[in-house]
Length: 264
Image (cartoon, rainbow, N blue to C red; front, side, top):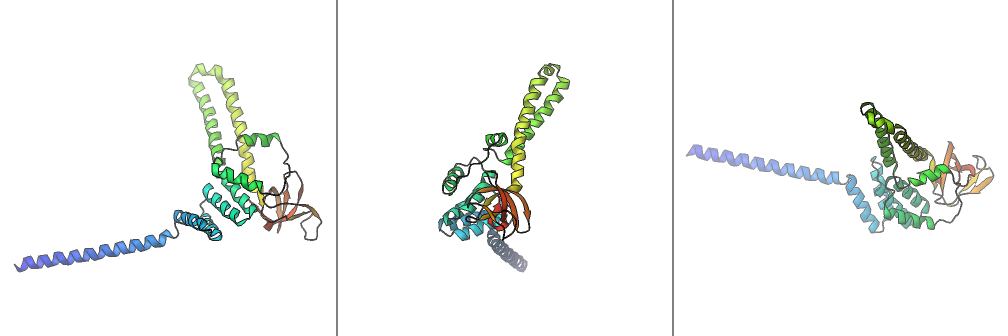
């Protein structure tokens, strides 16, 4: 009888201990989850959306940019940042972030309509120099850089496979010239926008200041050459301390302060 009571007390004691341990584990995990949630990119993204809906655009931008600081980026993230800046009336940074979004989600219908509307608010009309390279690049404007890279790699693999199969299947040899010509043409056609996009990654920028002056030389005392407008896209040719040598769409070249532009 005494043994039974002793065994029962031991069981109750261990049950209480296990219950206490389980409570501590649940409490600890809950605490960690709450602490981890605030730094979770998905949580921050939706928090930024909520702040945007409340009209707290600066706080929403801070939330979205904190995700970027974690080394993460997406087209939707840049799109939302662009929307915040548009609500604030900062067209330069609006265009900047819409451009960044277009590199990742070029076929997004909401982005297209908002970007087009933002461009209609810009107060300049400078014709861009056309070239056959830009015409080829525009053909593939609906593809992102990653998609062009994958497509180009796939065509190259097809070309290699064709020549490998040609060694074993003699009937394919009569198709060598037309097939090789078509695949090589596709490779060249895809290489042009790929090289152009990669080049623009380091050189394309947007004017974020209002009507900044471009000078003949990288000096505050230098004569003004021409004026840029907020939201305008330009090409950065070189940088020199706090100055950048840029080229406008119509081909004009001059020097501008680095803080008045931002690379896409």
